[in-house]
Length: 264
Image (tube, rainbow, N blue to C red; front, side):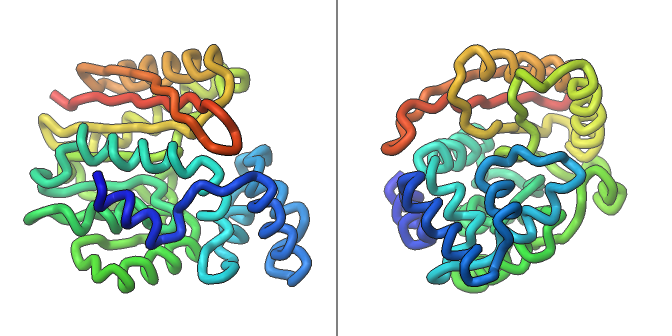
């Protein structure tokens, strides 16, 4: 997809070394845009769940017109490209009616899809107001009229969405978690999340979930199995999981997981 690659380059989503990104984050700390704690949290995502909103809000700080959120993502830019391509192809984006993006961040994927759809519309949610603000800037820059960005925590404000309205729901790096910490409680949490999602799918609607790139193959397999089990228990049919290796210039091979299902 040459147009997708061109879009990624135009949006600054090109592969960067860990050293380069760490340097950019250090400049963010030096200039007071973010704290050292926030920088560490954004890069590692190793913070407690209840603290994550403040870190994601901090990642909206920009350097040379690019958010720290996207700089961090660019370490695995090839995986981000793979994920966007997968959703576009498996989701049959051009022929959908209503699409929901859960955890849209700065709107990288939603804005691209908005330029490809025909009569459909995209509703993109994220709980970070600063990130949604950046997404709206990206929307305006690309003249993406068919996407609507909304500040909302899906776990708390999902009732605002009309049930049975979306024929495609996708989330990129919104639900996946390292298998080493994904125990019974996490599985139950996912079942609740996926049960809510399937209520908003129309009959025959599809769900596509892509987890964050992982280094350990066994943990990737375990996480994929947990997500498939949670989707199945949430009442989603035809659940399928797969893993694909993607080469990152600075990190080497990364395992990318994808889980799909259909509402019958």
